[in-house]
Length: 341
Image 1 (cartoon, rainbow, N blue to C red):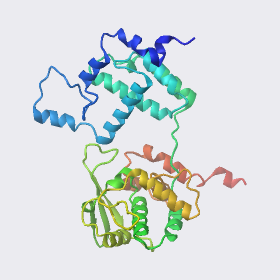
Image 2 (image 1 turned 60 degrees about the vertical axis):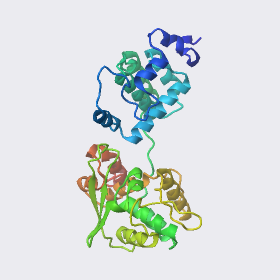
Image 3 (image 1 turned 90 degrees about the horizontal axis):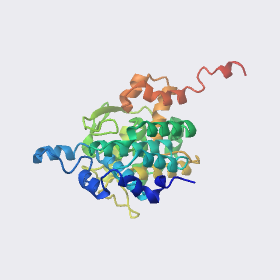
Image 4 (image 1 turned 120 degrees about the vertical axis):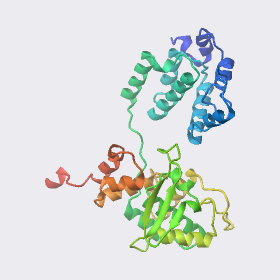
């Protein structure tokens, strides 16, 4: 029979021994505040300017992920502060149902909550570390990867497009996303002011990205193409027909053909890519907004481009991070079986 202390319905009994209530930790940690990753009450009295800096210490996407993880833990029946037994029970209940990467992220969030609140951190105990090792060994850590949209497949998709307003937007999005090796989030965050069009090509400024949460920014160049599918020409055409002179570069279009002021979402990018693949006779299963970035890196490897040049475009921090695309692109290059059969 399962130990009742590890059951979601009885977690409060487990936590009661810590001497701190859910209300107390909520007050200390300010879970419901807009910027909630630092204690709301502290012996240190901060100035307004210092408080403002703390409010900007966490990227918005990261903050939303933390909120989601904490809400999931509370909905499961967990309370704060948690014990090692509770954390182990939480891991066990999720194992096999959720991706290992998702579970690891949620435990990392809970660890950060306790540390930021000055509490004893149950996630740092040996029993929780052992549970996480068991999770990885039993369920594996390989993440599901988006299928890369390779160059030839991209050209096939583009050849099936017409010249409507939506066609021009989607053509520009796919070409620019591929040629720039953009992350989905970077692509939808692009604004007209981030683009500089020159005789040689286009210079795009990425103001913030997954690996640049501090907003240092970086610039990438996209040369004018040698084929009929030139990303720079596509951008110029899209700006002309859409009338966009400021604000988001890629926006929804109403059924009446009106371009709305807001930016496209990342999910919309994935949806329109799958729709375009289906229209081109390509099975869209496994493709997502990340397929453009993955396809660029893989296609570049197949074309013999150096990893240094690829990283200059994609912003990957190291060859190790880029390695999975290199492996994908070289599956048939110098393959031993090719010399035998």
